[in-house]
Image (cartoon, rainbow, N blue to C red; front, top):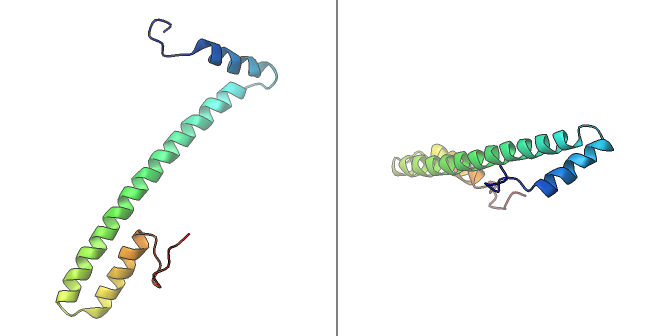
Length: 94
C-alpha cells in the first residue's frame, strides 16, 4: 500500500491514536463517512427522479391542454412545479 500512495499513514496513525482516549473513535469516524457518502448518493438519485417527475408532468400537462382537459392540465402543472420545488402560488419552496 505504501508504494501505491493509497493511504497517508501519518494521518491514519494520528486518527488511530485517538482511539486511546475514546475507544472506537476511528471506527465511528469511518462509519460516519460511509453513511454520509451513501446518503449523498441517495440525494443525487432523488434529484434525478424529481427531474424526471417534472418532465413527465410537463409532457402530460401539454397533452391534457391540447385535449382541453383543464383539471388534469392544472394538476400536472402543480406536479411539474412541485418537482422543481416551486409551490402552486409560484413561490420557491425553502
